[in-house]
Amino acid sequence: MIRIPHPTSALLQAPPAPEAAQVVESLRLALLVAYLQSELYTRAIAATGFIASAEATVFTTLNAHETQHISRLTQLIAARGGPALARPTFDFTAKGALPGFAFAAGQYDTFRLLAQAFEDLGVRAYKGQVQALVADEPALNVALAIHSVEARHAAELRRLRGKKAWITGSSLDDVPTFLQAVYGGEELTTQGTVNLAAALAATGGAEAASQAFDEPLGAAQVTAIVALFTV
Image 1 (cartoon, one colour):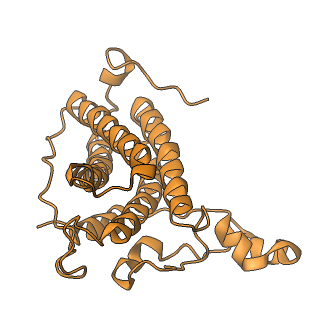
Image 2 (tube, helix red, strand yellow):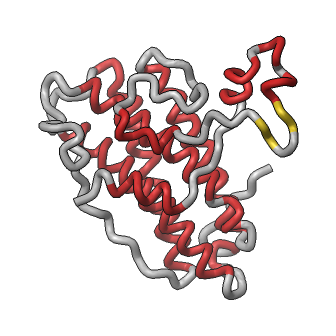
Image 3 (spheres, one colour):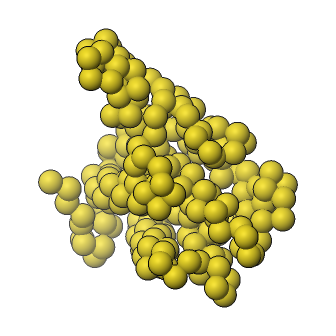
């Protein structure tokens, strides 16, 4: 069972050095991803008439979740004496890769595509930080709790877009190629020492094996992806 500590108790406990600095860096990376997601949803909601009425509840809920994630991560960082991380200035044209994108009429599909990619990124980003957080149980518990919610976000956005709820191989599907880094490495079919492609040959083979597991992304990979959308 995942235990999320109360902010006035175990949350204030910090791991011994040098693990503490590593924990703070991991939390700051998670916060960076949450800022990216939150900013996308906040701008979309603020654009009058932009979000389809049938999906308004989904996106307001996602935004509320990311606001809560930001609050908890910020609290964790501060309790460990870490430096604050200011919300970056975001450019959702991705430095020109999506020219003219401004949450305007006719751009709703692009917004949903970005939302899916950002939530897929979140799942892999949190997974990539588990080892760094092992020394700090309270921080690890919070990160794992958020990770599961990120996975639900990704599945829901994929459902809205008429896609499977999981990634197949390293396929971009209809996501632009400049976001390949979000999906690269997901084609792995060996977990530990077990070749699942062979083990599942009669029930889906390599495709099923890749779908059954999400692979972690490292800090440098995540930072580079987020940098595509910062000024």
